[in-house]
Picture 1 (cartoon, rainbow, N blue to C red):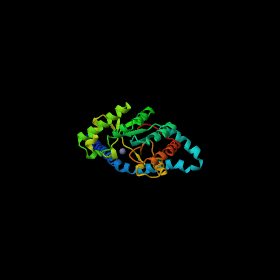
Picture 2: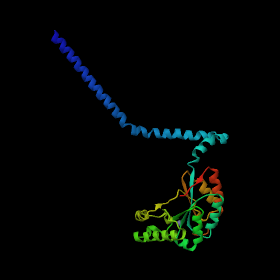
Picture 3: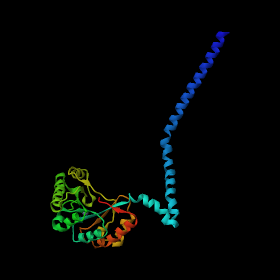
Picture 4: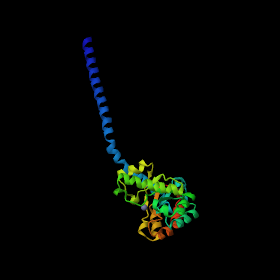
Length: 263
Ligand SMILES: [Zn+2]
């Protein structure tokens, strides 16, 4: 009898163990299945998260009637991050002093991407740029399309401009902006090899196309985001509209809470 009981107990225990193992497997299987699904599931939550974010963003917008109150906090919070860099290419030129006058009136510092050849022609203006606290950037010697240059020609071009800017202004640019924004892996390596950071832009006012001043301002202000780099031109052609636009551009950016930093 006892052995029969033992057998029964053993069988019972055995079946329990089997169930336990089965459950363990089931439990193991379950998490794997859950683990496998998150990538799929996580792809779905993001739109809803975005929707939630959009809702958050929309909330202040809905409160538009109470504008001063509703915007006071976000503006104060974002203010420290609301920076913008104004950059002027292809100078110095006869228009540069006019731009410097406007910047000085607003106590705004900007970055000037200079052509080595023009620095030689407008030495006083080049020195004034530095003297008034602006930053100089190397924009090549002669505005060559660097995608057409060999490695050695690109290097010589960068170095000539660098030397000219340093000799005239006493400053060595730390940045280089490709003419036309045109580069390739070879010329980018050349520029970096010269110890220069490549300077791009995020807002293109297309002022070189000669639109009215109001259009230049609208483009600069409409497309600006915190950390933006705005591209304008003080040289390379008729820059009356750029000069005429600058005062309003600065006023509007200041009104949006932007502070001006060097690029
Ligand atoms: Zn240029």
